[in-house]
Amino acid sequence: MIATMEPFDTAWMESLQQTSPRTLRRVMANPADIKKYTLEFYSLAKSVFGAGTSVVSGAGIANFEQLLEVGKLKNADAQDQHIVNIVDWLLQYAFDQRASDIHLEPRRGKGKVRFRIDGVLHLVYELPDNVMTAMISRLKILGRMDVAEKRRPQDGRIKTKAPNGSEVELRLSTMPTAFGEKLVMRIFDPDVLLRSFSQLGLVASDYQQWQSMIKRAHGIVLVTGPTGSGKTTTLYSTLKQLATDSVNVSTVEDPIEMVVDAFNQSQIQPAIDFDFAAGIRTLMRQDPDIIMVGEIRDRATAEMAVQAALTGHLVLSTLHTNDAPTAISRLLDLAMPAHLIKATLNGVMAQRLVRTLCPDCRGEVPCDTDAWKELTGPTQLATPATVFQPVGCLECRNTGYLGREGIYEIMPITHTLLSHISSESDIQQIRSAAIGEGMKTLRMAGAEKVAAGVTSIEEVLRVTPELGR
Image (tube, rainbow, N blue to C red; front, side):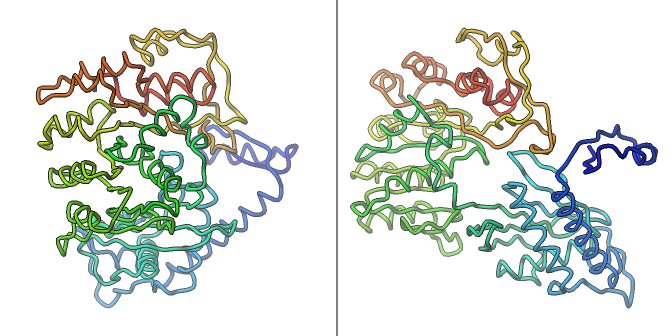
C-alpha cells in the first residue's frame, strides 16, 4: 500500500512495481501527514546511519558465533546523540501507534523492532546490530539497570510522557539470547484506570454480576485468563472504584504493574523471602479491608488468601486458567480443601480481549452458518443474517481492526454450584451447572459481540478456548 498526495501522478507506479515483488495499492493521504512521516523517517534513517558509521557491524554483540576482529571492538555510545534520537523516535512512534509492548530483538547481523498492537506483533523497523545494542544500553541507563551486566535477566522502569502530555510508565525486561541481549518494554497507560467498565466491555448483566461479587464484605474473587488478557486492567479499575477514604486497600504484586496513589502497593522480593504468602501475612497486620494479590501461584499463597477471606477481608487475585469453572479444579490442585473453597469463594471471572473491527472499513457479509455453529456450540443461539468482517485501511494499519474490548465469562458461586464442589469435583458437571445458572461462556459472550457488529467470528475463535478445553 503506497500513500500519495498526488492522485493524478501515476508515472512512478510502473518503475516501483518493477522493484517490488508485491502488488502495489495506491491510496490517498493527507499531504501534512506525508510530510510529517517523511521527515520523521528520513531523520531516523540519518540517525541510524550516523550511529553505525563508527562501528564495525556485529563486533559489539556477544553471541554464539561472535567474530573477533582485533583492534576493532568498538561499541556505539549509548549517550551518542544519534542513539538518543533513535530511542526518542522509538518511544514516540510506539505511543502514536497505540503499542502495548515494544520488542527489541537481536538477530544475526541485524536487530528487529516489533510493536504489539491490539494483541498482535508487527515488524516496524530493522536496524544494524551495533545500533540495536547501543539502543538497549541507552534504555537500560534510563531504566536504572546495570548496563555492564548482560549475562542475566534484569528488570527496570521508565516514566515518560506521551505526545498528548500524559504520563506513561514503561516496564523493562531484558533476557540474554543467542545473538545478544533482548529487551521488551511493556507500556502502561494510566488513562486505562480512568476508563469506565462499559469502555472495558463489561456491561449489562455482566457488570451487575461483577459488582455483586466485589461489593461483598469478605471472600475471594478471582480473575482468570492467559497473559495479556486484561486481568490487571480489570483489577486496577475495580480497586480504583473500591478505594475510598473509608477503606484500606492494599496490594502485593510481582511486579507492580502501574503505580497508583489511590491504594497501597507492595512488590514481592524473593531474594529476601518476601513472597506472596509473606506479603499477605504482613498485610493481615496492617488493618486491611481489601487485599489484591497479583497471582495465586502456589499452595502457601492460596492458604494465606483463604485465611484472609475467613477473617473478614475481601481478597482479589488472578489465576492462569482457560475458563472460570477450571479455577475450582486449579484451587483443588493447590491442595485447598473443598470446604474452604466453598466457604470463601465469591465467584470467578474469566476474560479475553478481542480486537474490535475498524469502523472506517468493516464490511458486512452473509453469516457463515458453519463458523457460527462452531462459535456458539450447543447453545443454539439464533444465526444472524449478516455479520461484519475486517477489510483494512490506513487507519487500522490495513489489519481491519482498531482497538480491543473485553469478553467475560462470569461464574458467581450459587447454592447450586456449592453442591457440586468437593474433593472429587467433576469440572464438566460444574461447568454444566454454571451454564444452567445463567453463565455465558467466553464464546457465547463473543457471539454477542459478533452479532452486535463489534468484532468478527474469526477473532473470537482465535482468542477463546473450545468448550471444555
